[in-house]
Length: 165
Image (cartoon, rainbow, N blue to C red; front, top):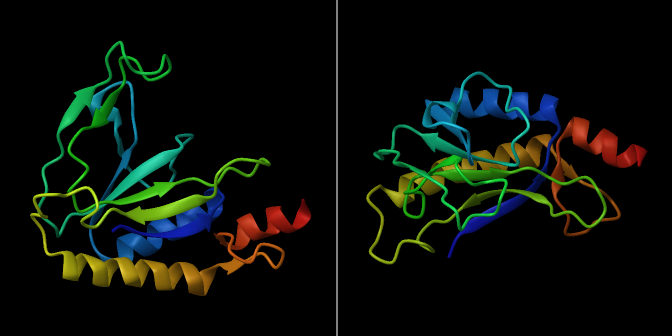
């Protein structure tokens, strides 16, 4: 089964989060989709307007493969490019929190062996150690909103926004 933690971050929180990740190991960030393969990778700490991202600690062997959404995709995705080999990859998926009522919580998700029926090509025990370090940072730097017992860990700017609502 996979592992996840619910999170809420605003751009300032994300910048701190990406800086933390880069202090742990060399990483590459990828958007969930983009108009071209070269635009999938995110450089710097500004993530832009995408909803989801993949975080790859490059110490783990993996070769990104790109593909393009075809006609059967939802209209806004048609023709866009994406990473096609993510199911058994050493990736942490970051989905942004939807701050509007009824929108999903953000999350950091590692599929672990959930989507890898033939196993993983990387050391999952070492990846899990890194994943746990990331989770500890989120818990240390974030906090749950008092009225949401099982809600996300809000990082400081996101908590200020939530508290003001």
